[in-house]
Structure formats: structure tokens, C-alpha cells
Image (tube, rainbow, N blue to C red; front, side):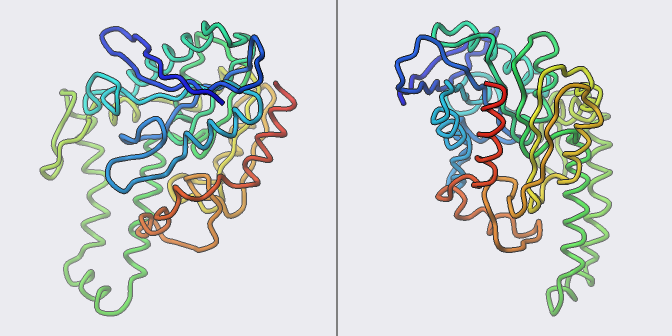
Length: 313
């Protein structure tokens, strides 16, 4: 494939991205827009320092290998994109994604009637909102379909409490002595209340600066109502070893969307879309993802997406 860096103008913001094109010499290709998950990872899915996941460039390579042109990009304030990451709200990210979608549809080598969106984690939550005013040929929702950010955070907090309660020995006794579990249980509701009451774009919680606007808008967003408006085919997939969302929620998409939906839980796949043999708690995520960047995407995932693409591309 060939790759080209592109710039997308979105108001005063310039979104920097990469277009990957199959080397088949065709005049027009079906296209895939990749929407990333939460956090400040770049267009490849990599964060600062040792956070190397190579998730979105791996997805791009898969889709290009199956005849699709792809576009992935740095969020505003991340990588080469301008703007402020800390001040970007959820709806800012939706508008950036809409601009990227229109850019992709107007690309001279793209068939505008065969443009798909692949959303991962937060990207899966936002994808239905992105297409409310602009049709696409289909959605692939990975590790986050039909689940709100508030629900995902609540699920993660619950697992964290349970993980702390399961710690035995001296560490467990110290946790009990200092009432760590009780403090963690109280932190979540306090944090949510402060974000909802904050008027400013950012706020501080326990001395840490956070994007209150992003949390506030996510908490107010009804992803299920947004899904009900989707008319295009959907493929929704979550892994059984995903610790960051509730895997079973993937089947709610079938109940919410009137059109064609295929929903699936892939056994042994984690949130980073890789096969994982070990069982980890949410307190061990760093260990679970340590070698993620060198692993291929789940074979069952790529097979499922390939079969779905054959039907709709």
C-alpha cells in the first residue's frame, strides 16, 4: 500500500491524519474511517512513552489488505493535530469525525457510496452520532457498542473495588487498615457529581486537572437513542476478556437497531483486540497490555470482519 499524510480543516482546528491506499491501481476504492478510543493516543493507537499498542495502524493494514482505502487521524491536540486535547468536549470530537468523514467521501480515489466507519471503544460510542446527518454504507463497532461512557466507567470502578477486595496477605490487611476500598467506592460518585456541576471546560479533582466538558457531555449523551436512528448495516464485536466495557452489552445493538445487525463476543479477545490467554484483573491492565503492540489482531476478529465486508462491500 501507499500512505499519504493529509490535513483536514475543521474550523480553527487542523486535523492531521494518514490515508492508506491499496496498491491495486483501481480508480475508486471502498473506504474506512477509523475512530479511536478515549485518551491521548495518536493515529496509530500509541500513547506517550512505552504505550505502544499499534492498534489503528494494524486495523488500517487489515482493511487495506481487503481492498479498502483508510483514513485514521490524530485527535485535536494530539500528535500533529492542532487545538487543545484537554479542552475538547465529546461533541467537538464528533464534529472532527464528521469533517474527516466528509473529507474521505470527497477524496478522488474513494467511492462515496461505499464509505464505512470503524469505531473502537469511545469511537464506537460516537459513530452513531457522527452519521446522524451523513449516511455511510455501514458501521463496525468494536469494544464499546451500546454502552455509555458513564456505564463503562461504573463497570471499571466496580471491578477495581472487587480487585482490591480480593487482595490477600499483608497488602490486603494494609488496604483494610487504611480503608482504601471504602475510599475508592466513594470517589466515583464524588467525581461524577463534580464534573456535572462544573461550569468550566476543565476542573480539578484531588489536585489533578481533568476535562470536565468531555465528561459532562458524555454523561448527558444517550448512545442508545443515537443507535435507534442508525439505518445502515452494523457489525458489533466485543471480546470476552475485555475489562473496560461489559461484553454482553454488544447484543443490545440487535434490539435497538431496526436494520441489519450482526453482534458477536469473541472468546479470549481483550479491549485492544488481541487474543489473551491469561486472566487479569483491571488492576493488572498494564501487565495485560505490555506486549500488545507486537501481537497481531485477533484471528477470529479479522475473519469476522472479512466475512462481513464480503457481504457489504
